[in-house]
Amino acid sequence: MEQNYLDENGLMSHRHPDTWMDAKWEGKIPWSARGNRANDIQALWFTSLTVAAELAALSGDEAGQQKFTAMAEKVQGAFNRLFWDSRLNLMADRIEDDDTQDFRCRPNQLMTLTVPFDQDLVPAETGAHVVKNTVNELLFPWGICSLSQQDHWFHHTMTAGTNTIRMRLTITEQSGDGMPGSPYLPCFNMGKKNWLTS
Image 1: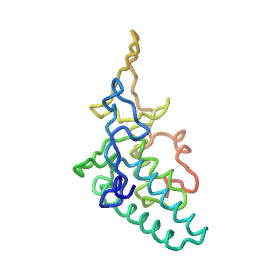
Image 2: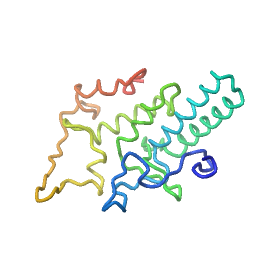
Image 3: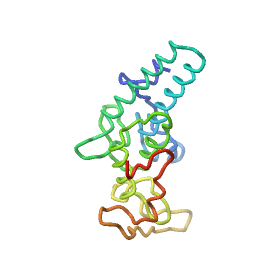
């Protein structure tokens, strides 16, 4: 696996449809191209490494613990360096084959906060920006969109057979800081950390 799927930074590489967004046109062309290093895949990979290190420690495998801990630290450093733009306060959805950052706003970035459970992948300040960006761009009264409506790939209409549904995209009442009103805030008090106030 290390030879075939990891890049020089220790990040997990994958094909376009190898995330949970795996729909394809006619079973061939990915609907949401997210290769070759998506942020949610890296969150899962980082968590796998931290769990492997903990299991190695519990079984007395000191060499394994050191190996997996070093790999997790490498992933964490590379992720924060390559995926986060501190000038724009944006997280890349993915890093492309040529190392270009794709800053499409998708809810997948929330997995970088919610999947790691024993060690944070990103700093608390980064996490707060991730939640704010996601809420502002994607959250509506009926749920969360998989892509910002400002993106040119966002589909305002869906066609199923002869029926066409046009979505009404209206932002609900917002508080002064641009965050949606209080009914949404409890959604982001996730587990051990409230990412809105950390």
